[in-house]
Structures are given as structure tokens and as C-alpha cells.
Image (cartoon, rainbow over all chains, first blue to last red; front, side, top):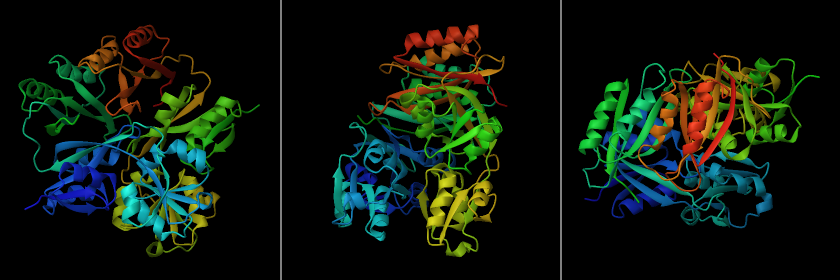
Length: 274
Length: 274
């Protein structure tokens, strides 16, 4: 039986492409928000779910980070890295000078900031749940709308590519994660994602925490902070590190970290994508 | 002559309230985006500018962080902390069940996520440049639109408050910063904001960097990372620490940090707001 793979849809999103790259044989099930993808895996409607977590220009997707911290007990089983290309898409025949609103996902709008300022200064931006939903939203409009989306979304929805290569940075890459009820067994070249927080704000506590990694020569590939939501100035730290949670050095570092943390969560270990 | 104070407007934004709290006698000049506020100070149109930088629920405003890193040589001269209340605002007489689109700033939408899911599941969200601009966008609509905005914006634009207290977390607070051509002289109770990055990814380098602070007993009040935009997995770290850059301990820590960094920038020192 093919794997039932939930993804952040509808069809035509970058996440759909990442999902196909991950498992071309899977049954792809689109969900319109990132929390709904996690809920589908939680409920057993899907075996695994694919969501974006980080872009090389826009940074982390806070909705995915907050879901991992507060909203889900799923694990990260895999990471998928995909180069991103953005296209301006409209109804066939739309003229650029007529466009008065541009729909997209907020991260896509952010990644095309300079293009938008140069060509569509003052044109209204409308938030869609995803880049493919932006094409649907655009088609519901009065013909003066456009969307920032994938080339595949333009094809799927019988829309026209009005402009190509509109992202501000050539090196635009998104990292996706596969959420599942268990993480991945060790492969010898793995990463582990965790989060933790401390009580109070004594000067050295984050330094000590990172010392648990540095003293064991464990490479930290990412550190990010998110608000605890309790009070301004209180943070939860999210760290990606090299190695699997079953590796001796990582196991011992994580146990050291757990001891000094008030909240500590392992999101999972998974093969490192190059 | 009163100070000319640029702020992230139009009138009726939370930033306007923060600006009044900061200097009630100032001439307030609204700008529709955060980069335009900085540009107004840069060009001399305004003496100082007020922009939001961080919310206790939504986290940092990446546009402000990226502006400080990449887009401006202005300094942070002051921080302002403001409790945030969100209101659902519509044309007078709007019925909740008729609403088919809700405008707001993306951070405000994020801070009302649960309220929106409970009361407006499936209703389209439209991105406005600010909460006050959302009220203007809503008024341009067909009477089935609403906006998430301040109570003051509802009054200013002759709109009606349809629902109050719609933010998901009671403890919703935003931190604003005042941008100016110079930072603030020492007061004895200050903070300093910096950013730095390193070449390569040797395991201990961030740990060593934080060691420059910890070994001098300097409290780190915030750490955040943003993409360098050069490649996925390369980050610029933003750190807030207690103390003024002219304090001996801070001065020496910053000089240690500068030595191990490939990019190093002091955003400024300013009085700590309680």
C-alpha cells in the first residue's frame, strides 16, 4: 500500500514538489494549513506529513516552530531541501499595468520584496494560506489580480505566467520536514532538532547549555528563539545539532541539557540532507 | 522646536501609541512601512523613527531585524514596551455572520489565531501594511469586510468595534525601538543590541562567542538568528545584552566578539525599559 502523505497544499505548492521528491509513489493528501497537516498525521488520516520549516531568505516559519513546540507531539523523520523559484501568475491576458492586488503566502511576498517595490509599488498585497491557494484567490478576483506562485500552480489552474525569476535572491532554498509518529533510525550522518528553556535569566545559562554541545565537539547547525508566550523577554531556544540522539556523545549532551532546562523536548533525529 | 518623530503608521497603529508614550510633544509623521520610517530618519525628514521589533506572542518582526542588519546604519536610541489589545473593527452595522474577509498586519493576524479559528474558520485573511491600514482597506470593501486593529483606529476612521479582547494571549506585549543617528548615552541601567556572524561552522564558535559575555557576567536578554541570505544554514545572530557599550565589561566583551566574527555590528545602547 502506498504511503499516505499529507502536505501543505493545495496542489501546486512548493511543499507538494518537496513531497514528490521525498516519495514519488505516495498518495498525496493536501491540507490547507500547516497545523491541519500535523492533525492529519495525529489522527491517522495520513502516515506522514510534509511542511516547510525554514527559507534561506525569509527565515523560519514561526507557525511550524510554534507547532513543534506547543501544538504537536509528532517527530521530525526527515528533512527535504528544495531550491525555490517564484513566478508572477495571472489570468491569461492580464496586463502587468492593470494589476491592483497580488496574492501570496507571506513568506513568498517577503522573498520578492525588491521585485514588488520596483514593479508594483503601492499595489495591495493580500495574504493567502499558500502560494497555490493564492492562485485560487487570484482567479476569484476581477482580472486585475495576480499571484506569486509556482510554475506548476500556473499550469494546474490554467493561469498564465506573467513574470519569471522574481525572487530577490538567486540562492533561494526552502527546508521542509516530514512529520511522523516516530523519528528516523541512525544512518551515520544525522541531525537532531530539540527545544529547551530555562527559568530566570542568570547570565551564563545559555552559554552553559551550548557548552554541553561544544565540550563534546557536537556541531550546532541552527539556533533560533521563539517567545514562551508567557511574557516578553522569555524565550524557548530551538537548536539543530549534528548527530543522532542515539549517538553516545549526543545522548550525553542531551541529558546534560535536560538537567538544566525547565522545558526540554526532542523533535527528532533524521538523516542530514545535503 | 518639537522633535519630528517618524512612525510606522498610518495614525491609529500601536506604533503611534508607542510614539506618543515616548514623546507626547513630538510632531508625529506617519510612514506606511518600516523601511520608509528608517529612510525618513536617514534623509533628515525626521529626527527619529519608531518601529515595532518584537511581540511576546508573535516573536520578532523579521522586517525590522533585516533592516537593522542589511538596510540601515541608524542606531537604536530607546526601547518602548506597550501592552497590546486587538479589536475586530467593521463598518457601523456590520454583522459578524456576514464577514467574508478580515484585514490586518500579519503579526496581528498571528496573535488572534485561536479567535479566528473559532469564530471565522475559513474566512479569508488579507494582509495590510499595518493594523490602521487594515481599517482603511476594510472601509474600501463591500461591507462584508472586517479588520483587526486598535480601538483608536476604529474611532479615527469612524468604524465600529465589533468584538473586543480577541487576542489569544492575555499577556500580549510589543517592544518598539526608536531609530536615530546616534544611540543613547549611559544611564546606569542600559541594554545593548548587536549582531554578528562567523565563517564556517566549527562546533564551538557560538559557544565561545557567548563565553565572551558569560565570563564577564553580562546577562544576555535575547538571542535570535536570521538567515545571511547567502545560503541555507548560514545565520546572523542578534543578541541583546545588559549594559552599555561604554561600560568596561561590555566594551571588552564586544571587542572579543568582534575578533572572532566575520560581520559585527552594534545597533546601539539605550536605557532598559521595565
